[in-house]
Length: 308
Figure (cartoon, rainbow, N blue to C red):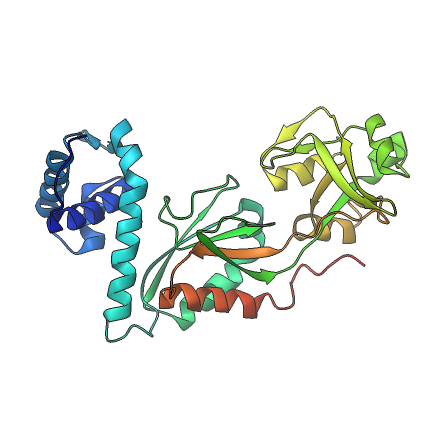
């Protein structure tokens, strides 16, 4: 890329480019920014000229990032976020939540437990437009342009702020049919003799970690299937395919209904705090603070309960 002196117009170009990259469309970005499509196109072209690289592939049907655009986008997204926060702080109604709020969360959790709190939040804050995307992959909070990302488990990135809004635990379980055919393990080390169904979106998907009277115990597991979807994993267990370790918010109803049975209940698994994660900043935007506060209040008593 060409080395250039700073030009204040570069900031506007970065903000516009980040919006086009997120929306995948000049038209959608123009609508979000309140600009004419021709202005959006001109600002991106100006930024490309300044940087000396092509940032976007343009066709009649879609817009896609070039390799250089992919590299530049995270920095532009940070600039766009900083500009948005500055506008919110400076606006007369800065304390009133407003604008687009981009939320990312796990699929199984979102499908089962998010609809009610989202509906209540939308009713209370009509000036906020919620854009909710569900995926189980770990996403880049800042680089991805997310306002709030919901995660289960620890968050150790110093660039992020994580606030717990609910608690959950992992449990090991299987169907009554599977246990009738294969027996129930009495100790985690016996899992080596069982079909263990693995969840793909964890860093250690080939082992389960239990708490024993002698301390933490990591147990290697093996089985016929791996999936990246918690709901499918639960269905497989209900169908008798094997044992699973899953958050209680996914399997609790199945256990209470008798479709699944807890296994190794005296050997604890890690707690899974439900956390609302957002970019680190001196003051979060009003819409972010209002949304996180709302989650904390709504899930104060988790509707999925906790195992006895």
